[in-house]
Length: 297
Length: 238
Ligand SMILES: Nc1ncnc2c1ncn2[C@@H]1O[C@H](COP(=O)(O)OP(=O)(O)O)[C@@H](O)[C@H]1O
Ligand SMILES: [Mg+2]
Image 1 (cartoon, rainbow over the protein chains, first blue to last red):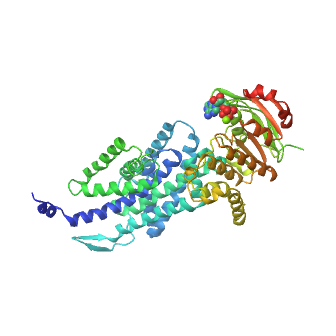
Image 2 (tube, each protein chain N blue to C red):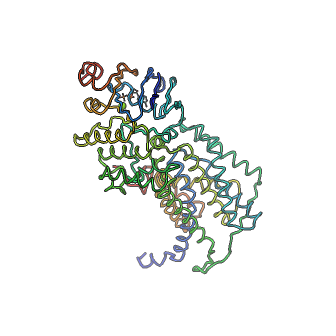
Image 3 (cartoon, chains in turn cyan, purple):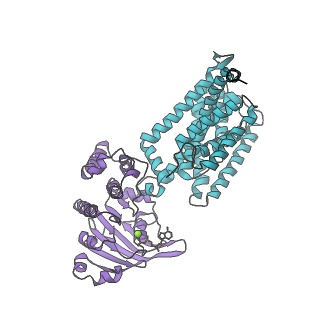
């Protein structure tokens, strides 16, 4: 096969469509993963219940949307309510475990994820619920009618992440969070109320997961197991991006989503996820501190 | 007059090892007090106990008339106890200004007051002012020590606990630390100074406690020890 034939065989239109798809899911994944990485960075807690916070956020979205008819109200309500739930979870299950073997927190959050998942199944049943997107406009994109809503999700997710970044960079409480992440003991000696900072970070992470759940709900439908798939990929992203490294996680989310999107040109989407695992394994083998982190000297 | 800080017979453990066996000491308002002893006798642990980072299993710590043993460290910092650890513990990824802000952003400190405090330390430590937007981790050892003390001063403390501030510093830096202690003294801030540098400690402080194996063995005015260093020899092995 000559070079010309090779280039002619590449479906550029599909490639572009998959690029846009990859960026859209990448931004949602980045939103889920940044909460997870923030929590990991500050308290060394791997939150196995993160996917269930995502799922419960989506359900709260379903309920408030039904009650108010307004998607944006539902988005804000779900984020705040799940943030509050996150704070309660932290106070009741994680704070008492501070200073214990990290294994105890893994077990606690894993147990919590089972409880929340089965609560949702019991409360809402196995049939997926629908979140109606706030608008249904489409634009012509090659041979597709591409929904505007997808681009709005990507934009909103980016805006939420940017707001988090600005808050961490310039806000007083942002400085408290970064100081606590870097040296918890010294932060406390400087008068920073560390136990409350940890609770607040858990709440912020939970709120971000809930926002992702509501934003993504219209694309997939809401059911009790929807968190599993996302949290798995979010974990991959957090490891590939460098545990606790926010910027790295965001890049990794987009990188992995793009790879999966391109891979699904050639294999069924359910198998495209294999690409993520390959990236995960290669990262663990060759750059265990993260793909986008300079190797420590 | 009641002392600012009174430590009464405190005991601490790390796991099963008994480290402090009943330390008692006092620091008056605005007083500079030295704490001397060989390596590993429990000087740092004493400071950590006062700062609330280690909780004594027995004994009392009274600060400004109230018992404080068992309170979380962040409450103590806000009551006016500032701690400068042996290893400085600068927040490496925060800029110098952000490092200072960790002690500055408290309730009840107005914008003008914050600026005043920042201007004061930057005037006093021009090295820090020049690099205010640089990450703390990029500073040299001596500069990190300056920053650790400046950061503690942001709390407007009544007492600063200084753990071996001159350790590993060049002579020029050592004399600058000596000057800073004098400035703190002039401003009425009490200092509890742990040091290996005996001459500096005797020069800077009014009284000295000598510790051995987790208890205070000797207590004397610095002037007395300057005149007769036999006791120092005994407890410091110099
Ligand atoms: N975190 C810790 N865990 C266990 N033992 C410790 C710890 N910190 C200090 N020690 C032990 O406690 C004793 C006193 O330490 P320290 O207070 O640092 O002494 P100093 O400051 O006088 O050199 C030493 O024997 C040291 O090995
Ligand atoms: Mg020490």
